[in-house]
Image (tube, rainbow, N blue to C red; front, side):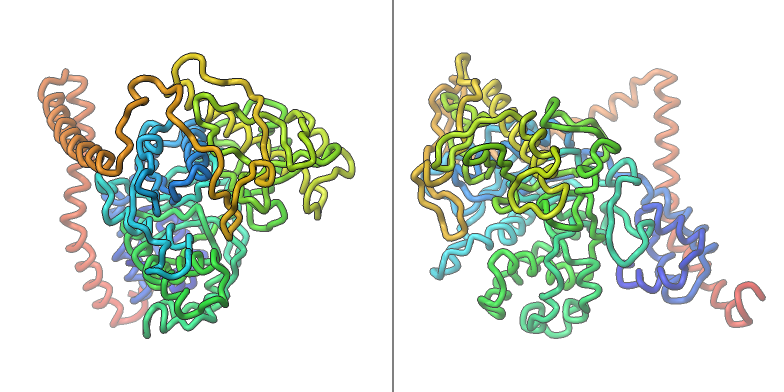
Length: 582
């Protein structure tokens, strides 16, 4: 792959117009032509001509649905509602492709039928073994994600066939769709790093993964990397500057499927070794994130690190807060004062991440109104359950506001809000709270409309309750372990007695896989029949497509010969002087 040559290419061909066309216009793998530049110093003009030949097989953009979004959870009610909120938000913004929820450490009586029910049409559930038990040692939930995605990509039924894999966290909701070729308007790419903006791309293709900047730094460069990655591994050669530029990132991770197979395999192995080698010197969550960095570096897959994929921590740099701070001059989308339906392809973050420590609380009066994912009752998708409204109770009595009040309080002179550091902090928190909470509310109503009998509870009169009010226990990482659980009461008859066992779920998956295979065969047969019986006009149109396909086929056959011929000529002429002299 050309990845190891990229620094050489950038330096050697800096400012060369032809090279910029080949490299920065996202043509898929100019491949051998690029290696010639790196190894032999061939000029950009010839690279341009050679890459024209590569355009047919490699230059076509991936379709929007050639993408598979995946996220990892346990089987708790706490993450059940997050999973459906994420899936609904994808539907809301028009996300294409497939979504898979990976579930780990499930109890024997887990209801997989409930986990399968989703508003999103191409939604799947993948069950893994129990990873977090750590072979009898202490409970460590952060094994779930790396070991879970590795198990999924190796054992998915049906197998993963989409070109691009996007790894999210369950506590995320969409604002804009994610596409294999990145945002449509490239002016909306946000990047802060040591390169020029035109040198980075948010498009995903083999050998070019991308991710969201996280301020995790480069501490992993100081690890005993030879004991983690192995002596001589490329991960041991990464310096602090490269680590910060290409690996200081987190979800969403976006990789080509073939790259994901490599990185996920190394990630699953290295996360265990990081715990063994570095021990308690690394924070629990960071040990998982640093293991991803080590896995990507081990396979020489530096990521283009972007800022525009996400907002999360309202005090953090390197996120898409510019779109919120300057909302009025960008998208003007305000979920507090209007409908919760973002305009398509707008200047907005693609995702909102709402981890507990940064989701806002606005303090307009008395004890304050708070939004926190850990304050959400676990049974909110139950047909008979109340829909959480705009009331919160942290033990000091309920406080009720409206979204419009939140925005008004957050944007007034000298506003009050949590962890305020700058003038825009309250505005950021209000925008996130409104978008996330309205998305959750809408996801509940959409779920009930699809799966519940008429007469389900739809009034938004529920409260956000602090764990002390819910009287629930929490695990060492702060997540509730118990509370009100979701039941089947009020479901439509077809779902009321559905088999929720693991055995039935896996049998369904195998049936689905057979159906996918048969569907592809029928589609191929249908295409053949339609070509045979098409009209003259249709034949003419299809003839154009066939011609394109033939050109691509000829190009694939002729490329090795063309490259070899050019290399022979280059070496013959190069021995007599420079290119220009020859």
